[in-house]
Image: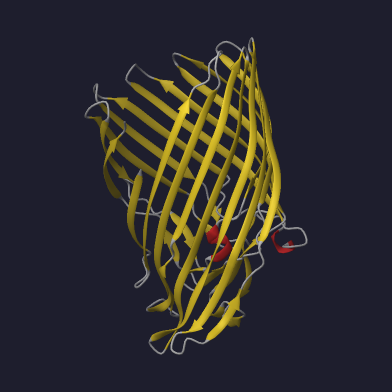
Length: 444
């Protein structure tokens, strides 16, 4: 069981957000053995709500005025999984089925004129994903072969978008997009060879991701930039291969992985207009603002290298590190030819991390973690560059007993400026500054 309640400010007067939610899960299981089958039953549920206010920024950025008030965005989801598991000699297998369902909506005030909001909006819908799967692994000496197959049916339905005059209640927009569905087979096959102190491995896989309720139904605004939802989105489909290897010993470990991925129908925020202008559905976009819509855009090809290492400096002290280098490129095809050759938004070429782990006492662990992300683009057209940034986190964990742990974390200890977004009129959004988190973890 977990719950949260967070408040955020964007750095613009009148722009803030509050997010609340809770989730719970329950698992019942029996491990398989050579003389009996195993099984697993899981259920989970979650609820959330977001209140979000955005503003329009005047020329010169001296003042702001209200632009949108998403005063209620309730969402609810649940899921179930049932699996039968077995072991026979070198073979382990699992057969199962799962269901995931979600529904959500947004209630908003917008079109601020003469000191008040003049329009109301309701939008939302429901999604379900149901699947069956089979997993298996086979061990033969130093060899391990794995494979899994899935068949999923995704459905989006009960979509609606309605807008009203705030004074009279008269409908100004009433859309009920048609429901959408897709049935997708996916799978993965892998092979691993144990080499004693090291290993080699390879895998090929196919997967998919249905669009989220946010992408389907919830528009949002940052400064003078507006991004529209799209109830006609299709699921993304991923195809990939990877190969790698590693070594491990008392002194530490090192692993390397090369990968090649293709993502078909990726969901991107696509620029479709600039202000000052009035657009259907979205309405007026101010000067310097940009109108985008979530769209499926051809495909993304990505190739890269991942390195991870650990050096055990002593029984109590260890150094860790990781590097990920990725070359990614959009092929917009006929749907978005203007994006062909561009880099996906918010995707740096290089990301790296380094850490220090120290067991200072039997119950006390101290951690230092540094992370670097290279420069990236904020937008689909690669016109707004976000600078590279490095952050440092410090944390401590103290075990009160076997079930309770105290945690303290100083995030962004050096108070680095980490740009996360930039609007068309030059307003830059930043990640959280230096902050302190204190928590209690209880596990039974």
